[in-house]
Length: 92
Image (tube, rainbow, N blue to C red; front, side, top):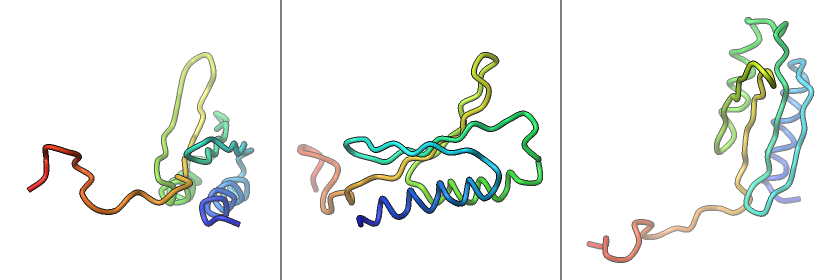
């Protein structure tokens, strides 16, 4: 099993253990984990949840009056390319 899948599954499991219901979706370049955060989610649980999503490659929180709060994290499937990532014309 690819390490990105293991990482995404671990993040989802740890968010679930913190009391959130998660959704995991596979995309071409990444795996996404989303969790709806209810208004009743305890404030003292936020440090743990933020520690969990900080292990992802990207994470954030979407909040709106219409859809509530959705915590999301993304784990890249492929390792970034090594070498000069500045592109042509920017080489030394």
